[in-house]
Length: 158
Image 1 (cartoon, rainbow, N blue to C red):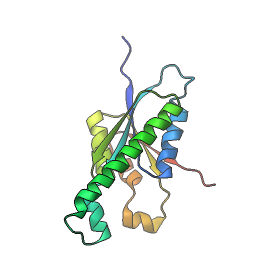
Image 2: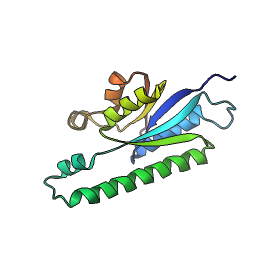
Image 3: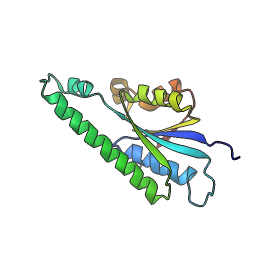
């Protein structure tokens, strides 16, 4: 009986940095020339809670929340489709995509524990010191709090 594959989680969102990290991961760990991939791949999208998005924009009326919910679901479906298309293009047929609601830092660390992942891959947005201080760095948080190895993939400067 073959040994169970280790699990690799990859964080995905709408950003070019995230899609670059996914493509880089597929190219380096899931090449079609490799008959037996070392990992099972699960992509995780952390969908924001509508109320948290609205709070960033300012005061909201009750009718905005259902509209925001619809937009966030559409965005999650679009991201899921992008992930599957890229994996298919790279001949990776076995990928699960999960959408979990919440702050990406917490969602990713919870997903690591839930799946008992061996590796978490996150893209780096390349924020400067000020943006990182205000927004927080998901990759930095995960590197310090996830209970597995964390690989941060940086998009090269062009």
